[in-house]
Length: 412
Image (cartoon, rainbow, N blue to C red):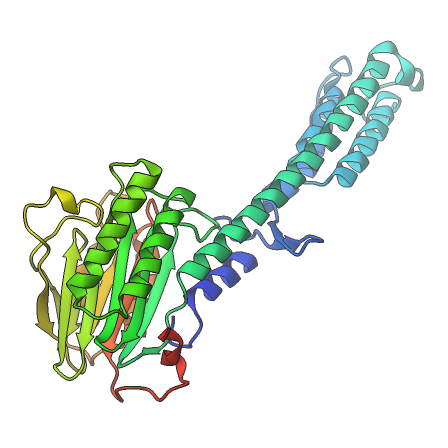
């Protein structure tokens, strides 16, 4: 969530609808009868038919009479079909026929005579324009159906992903939190990154992970991992017990879909407020980053294989701890953040950027860190080739929130 309390999912959805997140910057949405929104074609495409007519007419007047440049108007309905609807394409076809007739029988400007209006080659052009017009109407109708189908599919996929990756409340138990998700699939929220945080009797437990693969294929694994975490996080046992449950679930999933290379890199975190301590279990994921007292440090520890590959390890995973007190912020992210490249191919320098922004300054909150990365990352790269998930945590200054507050949504 951002500092205003608006979830990143809602903000991204709103920006997409308003065109703020589109490459063209002007693709305002059109609401169809079913309630879904179809992106409007770019402005240059909407003006293309008119520009085409103007160009043909200018060339027609600038060339000798024997050159029937106006015959190029035959292609006008197809040009219009890329951006207009079936009715508009039919109107453009009728306009093209009228314009061809005017050019064929107008002595002014074109040098033609009225008796040339019904010459064989002009009649053939009229027939060809009418036939192309019919094809253009069919093409426009098919294009609109495909756009509506894609919008429906994207809306369903986005709703599914928003159900799996629920918005992060401001406060969960005794920690403040903020989250961000950015999918590599343009225009959708579908991806293979995941995060969640739960307030349990053992403390606040959080996970961030990255499923091998992308798109809809990875969503099933995301659902399995999050479902297992949300159940196991409340059960008695340590964080290693939670990780073991998830490892077994991944092994079953791999057998069910017959994928021996299925795995998930993940970091599990547990916050013990009375002890002022973090417990971390890292399964092949990017190290958590701690912002504390103006210093930015990667919290390295004993490595472990990703979830799903545990049978290949010689030794079981090992948890490690680190102090975590007021003024500290823990940043968890996926590799889509640190592997984002600029135009020269350089990776996003996460630690350097965080030090530049937060070093020797007042302690930031989780929302400050997420907002900074959400603004700074697009400045570094224009194209995202991988999903990006970010989860930031900090000890809440007022401790446990009363029942019924925002943090209560995390209870079972």
